[in-house]
Length: 352
Ligand code: NAD
Ligand code: DAU
Image (cartoon, rainbow, N blue to C red; front, side, top):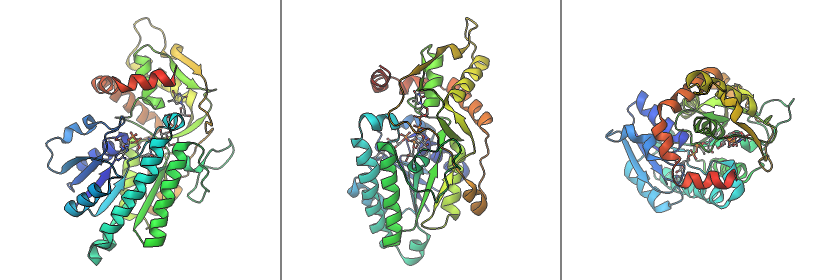
């Protein structure tokens, strides 16, 4: 038994692989293109672990994926690979179309051919799990109920539109070809190995570096935060027991306004790493130009996953965010590595 995990050197993929091998011995084949967001250092602790095989490559490379499937014969493929940053999708959508739509399509084609070649028992046990986002549902008003699986898709950014397209392809491969698929739509994750272009790690990094903490617009946009390891446990649960062709919303009932998240981070840093001049990190907060088309509110109704599959998050926002700040304080070498080179160019352009 083996699983193939794509996007395994990114934030959530790496957490998933590390957790998977920490709790069971089923080998993992990792496939990652190592874009700016992919970092082999995230998987460094598995370097001499025989249960883990890393392959550098693109989900859209059909020949490579065909070879991997034929050689390792996985019982499941979990697709985390994507371009994932909304702001980058606004500045340059092309890569998002290539990986999230065309790449997912090519991966599905390879998986379909492989699945068709399997003996009956393996064929019925096989799963393709597609990791997606709550952003496909669009934006909520302040009194709207949280997103349910039955909400219609209303993506608003090139990123969310490309993820929505990939979800539709996955759905179509089940409906048309019978491919045994599962889709998860999760809210905002945070935790270890989160690339510091996203709000939480960016704020921790900038705070410690004495730089401005950029808040888009009025800072009252709401996101629903989930500790990454809870997302990973939800994916494992859906892989084990999800109903084929179905989608599952994943979230932790943790709606927070951006400004409140940043205040919380500053307050934790004030306790854990007080500034030598005795001032608060809150003084570094700076309001900047808003993100174009900025979605106002996301909220996930994860009751289906709880009711049908018995999943619940282990962390509250308060426990998870403290662990996260602690991880960044304890892993400043990791931060220093990922914030050198190309990262500086991005920050220079985005916050000019
Ligand atoms: P990430 O940007 O940190 O990592 C993405 C990984 O995919 C990187 O390692 C990158 O090198 C790899 N990759 C990119 N293009 C590839 C390609 N063509 N072939 C192979 N590998 C490729 O993203 P993340 O935050 O870990 O997100 C993982 C998945 O979860 C994405 O599909 C994303 O849409 C989804 N998601 C993310 C969040 C979140 O809050 N971060 C929430 C819900 C869903
Ligand atoms: O909802 C799930 C999604 O969450 C995932 O699908 C995406 O892959 C992931 O990147 C994340 O998207 P967001 O756009 O919500 O995350 P980000 O961390 O970029 O921004 C969170 C909020 O903070 C958002 O309202 C924009 C705001 N923000 C972000 C940055 C980077 C700021 O105010 N200032 C910033 O500098």
